[in-house]
Amino acid sequence: MLRIPCPVCGLRDETEFTYGADATLRRPDMEETDPGVWHDYVFIRDNPQGRHKEYWHHVSGCRQWILVERDTLTHEIFGSSLVREVAA
Amino acid sequence: MSQYSVLSILRHGLTGNKHWPRAWRDPAPKPSYDVVIVGGGGHGLATAYYLAKEHGIRNVAVLEKGWLGGGNTGRNTTIVRSNYMMPGNTIFYERSMQLWGNLSQELNYNVMMSRRGYYFVFHSPGQGEVLRRRANVMRANGIDAEFLDRAETMRRLPMLDYSATARFPIYGSFSQPRAGTARHDAVAWGFARAADKQGVDIIQQCEVMGYIWDKDKIVGVETTRGPIRANKVALAVAGHTSHLAAKAGLRLPIETHVLQAYVTEPLKPLVDHVIIYGGAHFYISQSDKGGLVLGGDLDGFNSYAQRGGLPTVEHTLQSAKALMPSISRLRLLRQWAGAMDMTMDGSPIIGKMPIEGLWLNGGWCYGGFKAIPASGYCFAWTLAKGEPHPDNAEFTLQRFERGYQIDESGAGPDPKAH
Image (cartoon, rainbow over all chains, first blue to last red; front, side, top):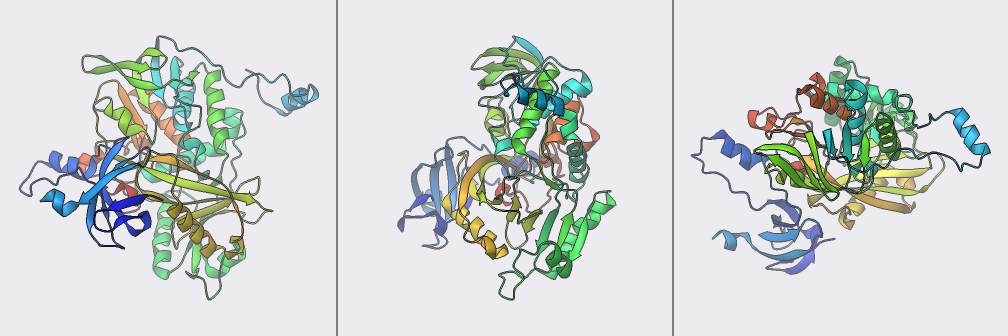
């Protein structure tokens, strides 16, 4: 069981959350016409062994999307923040 | 290396089983090889075996950072089947199924292939139609498939919950009679012994740290046991493909996820077949020792940890209980997990990489065990001839750029959904 720190609700069980995706991806500009750029965005992942930035949705809690940094080898979590605050 | 036979068992039995020779050598790495295969699991060892046997390429090393078959080869639920539907997958997995049939004789090693039949139970007419389509595609490709109504399913699988209170009522099932299970450790050991007999060097406790470059070409690997040069470097390290590719500057359409499996305390014979639950992602069979072998979903987030979390344990056991309430008081004996290469379409990658000298066999998601013989056969062919065998021709890395994903489950570009 992961215990995920939610910036709103505090430390909560993994079962309250839904995993989103790799948070380092940036959707290309909608005017982008190079298929290579879209290919990289849709299919290619760094898949690091170690620290990984990822989105989780606190779907059974405050319903906020949060950004979590977690180690994919040890599952240690280094902190979280609200996605809307990071994106702003 | 001696041949295993009834006579050799009798002879060694009479001498107290004290004189069995070791099954394969433990050589020191040579400075160079024709082919270096990274990864001593089923896929790497099978590739080495078929390279030597089918193509006469015997100057081959298999490098393993731990011990043979200690990765996903020894961490699966041992199911062997070829019930695939998408072009590219059907012929490939059927080749594997055919190779499995004679594998014990071929390797002179009992892999305990047991064609006990595979049953996928379905829980609505719509789900039945989807499976009927799959059965038809399989039969059109010459692969065995049966479609059973509720009464026949009840007759063959009487231990399931057919009551009015079942969480998901069982409408019928879809079966592949030739499917079954095999002993996973024996597959690694059998291929290792047979490859070693052909002259392949199997080098354990040898981790690849990086590559040896000649300008922009890979000409070998740097390992914990020194540099080893090779004309071709072949990766077969499923679960860890991304970071070995990253050392070569290559980014891949793969995420690593963790998948768990479980075995219960042993019982008398109860589950004669491999049963797949259509109400959730759950599968069950019974080992020859009597333990029920259970498997379920991925844990659901990127992970290289070879251990799983309790929420997925609970989910899997709930599925087990919903399908077969009679096993609800069984205790789990062991639980384990493996790190899976989940590709963006759920299908593997076998072929030449954009970097000269580097070849890849990976992205097996959680279907790699059954694929071992065909994967070795086709990867060996690809390495020897420089071009894919017709059976693995679709498993290119370039299919993602060209829009030819082989999306068996129709889940789209989300690795955790396949």
